[in-house]
Image 1 (cartoon, rainbow, N blue to C red):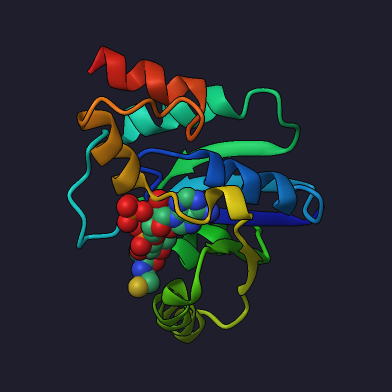
Image 2: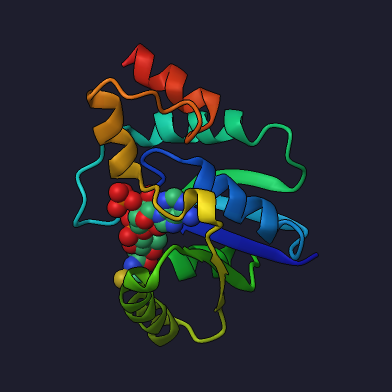
Length: 156
Ligand code: COA
């Protein structure tokens, strides 16, 4: 079984993330969507809320699991027997950040490799904070995020 971990803040998950996830599932038998902490960010949704939104958004996709960790992503990947991490690249501006993140992960454990997918053109401009900004300005976000995210925003 080929297993990969797709780490991120997913605060909240967007259609761009779902696109990357679906494409990763064409290569890997199982992909674990892992909510990991970026300590430089202040979270909008709790981990429990994020897990709930992702579980609902991926309920029809075979081979997806959702989990969270407070520790290192590569340590988690090793523990669950994953060989690769999945990351998305939206634009050249993502490259520098991803390059240093990949280098840090490689330094921690070089046995876990990283696979990058280019975001599709429809979602290359989306980010979680942009979704949050649009929602707070009453712009319709329903074409940009799964239904579970819209519901969670309304509930909050
Ligand atoms: N579609 C839509 N948005 C996308 C996207 C896509 N395909 N790809 C990236 N993004 C956006 C996200 O929405 C997010 O937007 P935001 O900044 O507005 O929240 C942004 O790109 C990047 O977010 P994400 O991919 O979640 O990365 P991150 O920098 O928040 O988190 C972690 C990276 C959590 C994976 C990393 O910090 C980590 O592994 N932490 C655990 C600790 C660790 O292992 N540290 C060692 C390495 S330093």
